[in-house]
Image 1: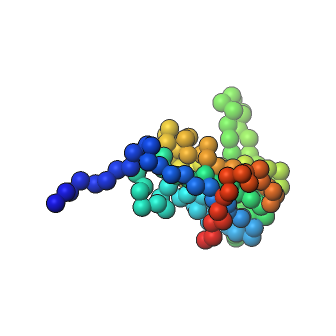
Image 2: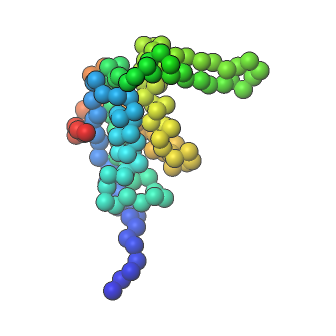
Length: 144
């Protein structure tokens, strides 16, 4: 009896393309599904030390919702590195100006903070509207 765990090789990885429609869905729920697909955790061949994830296209991210009072209370912060260089933007303004960035930041925070996560985030495409430029890849619709 063989007691070794099977680990997938780099050349055996098969990548699919999935579309997630974010219309009227909570931002966090969309982000967790996308992070799961990007990481490859939905596959039986998941390997923690390899990027076995699929490509993800998110459409209609401008129609994503935030529950509770997060629209007014959630604040996105970043710092330039200089004194007094902290910038803040409220979620309502962020979703109005750049909904793609809000969703990308949420997904990026759910991926590993190392080279594996940086490799995974490159397989993400986020669009504010319902049109996307990846028809040639024949993406499948991911329902959750």
